[in-house]
Image 1: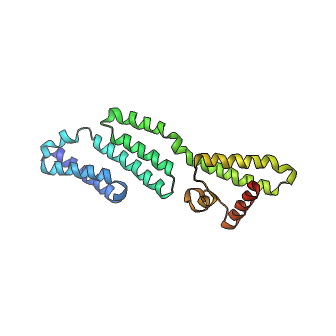
Image 2 (image 1 turned 30 degrees about the vertical axis):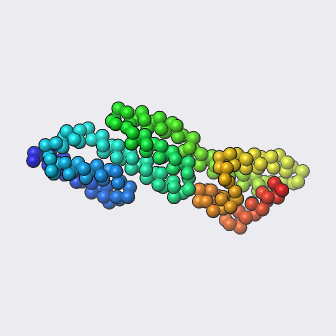
Image 3 (image 1 turned 60 degrees about the vertical axis):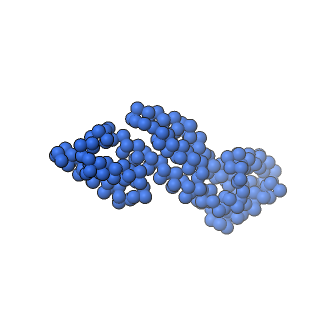
Amino acid sequence: MSDEIKDAEKYLEARLAECSSRPELHKNTIAVYNSYLKVIRERPGDYIKEAGDMFAVMKAEQLDRNEDFALLYEKFSQVEKVKAYKTISEAVQNSSGYGDIYMKTGDARQATEALLNIEYKKRELLANLCRGITAWRVEIPAERGSIKANIIKHWNSLQELDPQLSWEKIKTQPGYRNSLYYNDGQFALIEKWFREITA
């Protein structure tokens, strides 16, 4: 085994050790390094030809990153972001080299931009809705009309983004509930006032 191949083996072992400290985050990359190490140990003469430009490593790292984001947002019940990162992962999976991975992932990111931003829009609308309900409650009855119109508008906009939206869902789904700073008692009052507004 040449010194160049020995150095390559040491490099692969070091990178594999780094990834193995958090295997759940690097499963694709670990598989590639293990594959390269198998070649370098069993067929060292084929290593340079098979490793080539190391595109497989870059592809695996991109797959790990996007798949990990999808799993993270799944835990937060942010389904739109899960869809977006799965779409980007598919673009990575379908790429064949440095020449097309950037174009394919760039197209996927552009196509999923609305999905990636939808959670922010939901949180912003929900915050505005709750502020509007509180403002309606403290306003004199003669001035409540315009505030009520905005509250209905925000609620309708939220339902357009999430047709299954309900107060129960806002209270129980982490993506919604964690974006609000109201405690349970305060939030119960906001829900009660909303029902008065829309009665």
